[in-house]
Image 1 (spheres, rainbow, N blue to C red):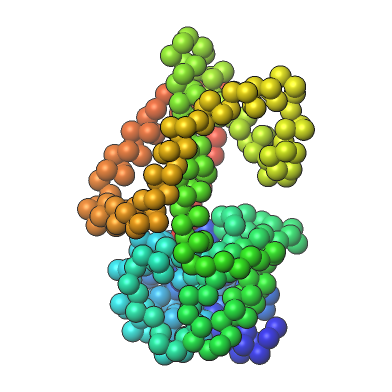
Image 2 (image 1 turned 120 degrees about the vertical axis):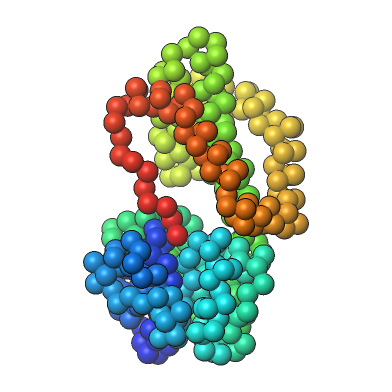
Amino acid sequence: MSARFATSTVAVLGFGNQGRAHALNLRDAGVEVVVGARPGRGAESRARTLGFPVADPPEAARRAQVVAVLLPDEAVPAAWPALAAALAADSALVFAHGFNLLYADLALPPCGDVVLVSPTGPGSVLRRLHERGETLPAYLAVHRDGSGGAWALAAEYAEKLGCAPVLRTTVREETEVDLFGEQAVLCGGMNALVTAAFETLVARGYAPEIAYLECVHQLKHLADLLHERGVAGLRQGISGTALYGDLSRGPRVIGGPSRAAMAALLEEIRSGSFAREWAAEEAGGRRWLEAAVAGAAGHPIEQARRRALGPRPGPAEADA
């Protein structure tokens, strides 16, 4: 361990999926960790159960030389005045996502380092791989180099976290690509695609349970192949019929209109329009979002899932 981490306490602010993984992995690497969590909440109880010292976030930040800001994106601006008042002028800050560095006007320590260490997966995956002795790639970026050693700080934090290989980027690139990936593929695009495919089959008389198993349930198996082998490798692992359907019909599903929609949503991200829209939704009490989530939860695809697969575990704890 370098002199910097050997003599530093790291405050992990937030103890959701991401915060829990960071705290545990850093402690396993010999780093002294204090968890910042609001008193009386579930996060405080979970952290104490795992043996971490816990303080409210400003007090945890006050005790530490390196502060990992792992609160939800939407919670950071409101929490920041109290946190900023607790930070020393040379406090080092580590963010796991650049959203607030890019879109929020945070008062940052005048002499401290501000870096981005962004694992390329959820905290649960980061922790599981660490427990197996495996690593997860991560993006590194420097937002402010107050000490002259910000890149070294980011690299060592990533190493202690169990991340490798690491790719240097910028806060803007990480943030914009991350948001685009979530909206176009990983969440928005994937959920919209499987729902539309399910609806197409059911509307034409096919059994909902079979439509679910074909268009949703099997997705994991192909995604695993894609993850392990890439696009070309996946195509080597499917039948000739599936391969011909892939290359001849896939471009019709993701054709000109879909590509234009992707370009438009990327421009909304790059211009800051999406961030402003999300901030307004949060400030308004998430009324549209909660209604949309409730509506989607009642979709026939959920009933088909239960009939096809039987009782399943509930949703995992939200990442924070």
